[in-house]
Image 1 (tube, rainbow, N blue to C red):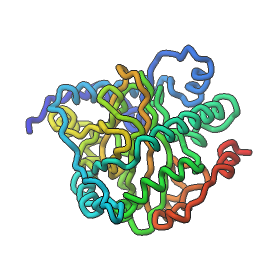
Image 2: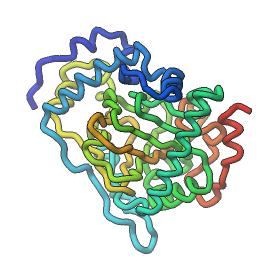
Image 3: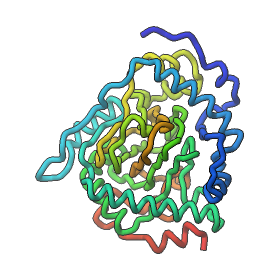
Image 4: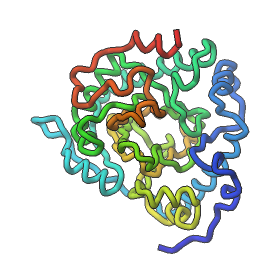
Length: 344
């Protein structure tokens, strides 16, 4: 491949705290007083966020000028007898490329009901933060580019439990194959992008820091088209070498963005993508979208003394208690969570 001339001049001049694990934001102020108050408490429009926006703008320009995308590796429908997807094929795809597409995880009716339910959880969670003094991270994950974008932590209520049990009963063998037999659910949330959400900077969710490996599953709760800010994945970047190149922001990273094909998370309602959280990826912009994008997000890894207290997008009290191999024993926890979330 040709190596492009280096263009990361302005972003190289920023300190590492600005360049990496960025949270991009719009500079306009919401006309809705409650939304403006929530944005203030979530720091969605801070000056540091505006500076971080430079990174994403350069990256997206390179991606637009690049060779485009190709279909991500996929598996067929679940086996009619076991209801499992092809565990070995799915695991092989993730090991080889960093990700795998799964068709028909959820039916249309379940997607619709869960999406409506999540919308209500979002309203309640924003009110808790804006008006009732709840800490932002008790209700939301620290999503990047958080203006018009939310990573709302979900309660393990009846509807959520039913949906994730349907999903995980089909894919948890693959997840355990990838991250360990004793893997637990370590993230339970919904990624929401509203019309106007800008693209995220390129990032990885986890580092090579000695912690157990982690995988994340994104389940589309509506059709996701190119205008809705689908996630862009860069296959085979889930390596220590690529993490170094990411930090250096030199010609190799520029070539990745501007001269290498990538995968686009355009999905049908009910489809899903499982990916290694070391993989470089970003949500693209939804500036021209007229629809909300909602993704059910489930992550799993084995827990130990080092990572149990680390950041994970899951409600207080859940982490380390939801083993994938004990899925049928999981129970509703709605009442317990509301106490934990509000701090009462």
